[in-house]
Image 1 (cartoon, rainbow, N blue to C red):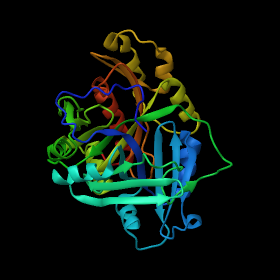
Image 2: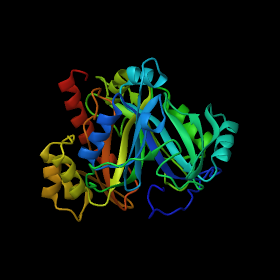
Image 3: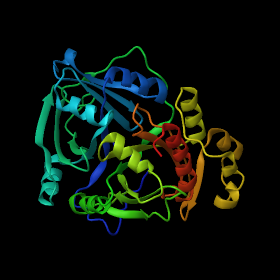
Length: 377
């Protein structure tokens, strides 16, 4: 399950590609009510039922619903009793990402290479089998309580993983056009960004492809710094953010306060038609950050000619930015759980390989308006 089947597999010249990663296998969130969360992702975001694990499958500890949309798989997991590690995680952090699973050819090799390079073990190579074949999984710790699971599934034909059964549901919604995970952003404490940049370089052979400092990402009141780490073939991209000193509390500071530690801030998902996708998401009740309409008055002066109708972009609040390779369109949801922590980005790339640097100021001012309403700025 590669992120993007049309992507080239040209290796970045500075990458040490000793651990080829084929794509994002799945993202697992620990949530307080997996059944209700699954209904939200299906109804509001166009995911479909894929697989299930729980009491009906002999699992007495947890309940998990697996949802799919094109090449995106999301696992929503809740504990079935009190006093569990998952329950503690939810109590401390609220709903949030625990696992970023990476699809590899050999999960044992990937684990051994990562451990040899200084990673901390989360899961030793484990063979899981059922009537559909076998899967090998292993895992390492990353920032905060996030873990990376290596998944080797070339000998498996089941719905998802051993221990899960196909989730047959009479209620299925239509796709909103989400295709694959473009990138996933982590927030870490002040002073920790370079530590985790070095971790991804050393342990996974990633390369830094972009860097933004507080001159790039700042407003009158707040600022942050970010570095983008990428696998050699560009299929996996992990920007790492840390707060920068400012007059008021930044969005990163707010995240770290309410998540109570480092974690995944947002998941960027790609679409081939952002106007259609965002229109459908809004119709289903998803709330997005909005920038002032004056942003669009000089849009073509800033980014040049684009294919899309600017009035349509203005109506929906979609942002546009250009780099040397082309342009991109992007928009950000408001946070999707009670705490002001995780959210989604919807992105359409039309050649651009960057992350919307030209939109940072307008976007951050929109986030600050939300913070002011929450009393956390």
